[in-house]
Length: 387
Image (cartoon, rainbow, N blue to C red; front, side, top):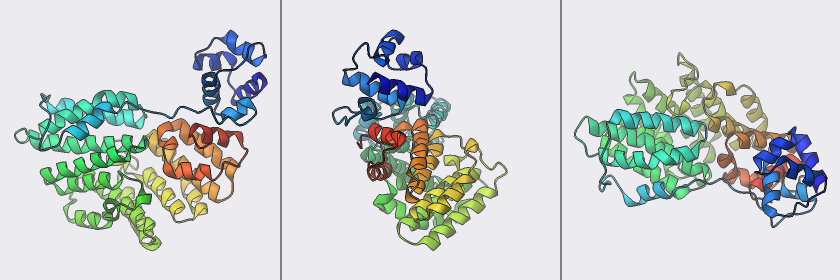
């Protein structure tokens, strides 16, 4: 077993001291394991070594390891669940509300943490901000409207986190709370922004009514856009959502038309990929979406061609970069190039672990590939709990 550990470590290009440190063991202990001088007989150690070296446990054991499981990423959702379940706009928590420029600063920090996939840091702040903004919805104007806009933003962040950790129930509650806040606010642009969040609270495979409504909602938004850059960005993201809605409904021509319109909108902006754009609407993010649409249309060659043109350096979010690699993984699998597909999935996992390991579509594709002997792919499959 020690020889297999050494081989996997060298294949990864990692020195023995680094491996020992990452699993919480001494360099001397690790050296004795590799030299066969001490047994590797604890499931916890085997699992930890396999995770760090990005291989499956059976690669270390040299035989099936059905009783050794990787740790799925998790985050403490107790407080967030409490806020969403216990309170509503009609019945807010009895908490003081700080000046709203302070909660706005918190939201900017939370957005940055989401882009870096620092979910633990988010959960230390997001529940309290949601508490305050529920209460803030009862302040006199203009603070009331500002609190509602911020609440829609906060709920949008919660939707993404909950989706990434497989909690579609909480994602849906967050999306619906966003919708309720938009109703209270009465602003067509923010109403459309909330509709976008609700549309993506569940996987597109569910063909939720919220997603299927986006073609109508984006058309209703157009008369209200004006000169506000955010309104144009919301418009663009809803065009992409409408394209996805049409794609999962089987209308490929209309999906293509919606995506092309989104691309035209993105090309009009002075900054092609503004890191401050709403939901990162821009040329590169449109490219990520069009890659997804090509995969959903069953055209993997087009998906690879489109994805090759995406400037990933311009994507200001590890989540969006991971999404691109996930779609390239699916496209390459469709093309029968499973070894390369495994490398794409590994790249995605390194960027956004929870997003990859909790994705039902990725899980299903990996499950279909478990007969593949490629160690990289088997390592990802093991860490996902598929094998």
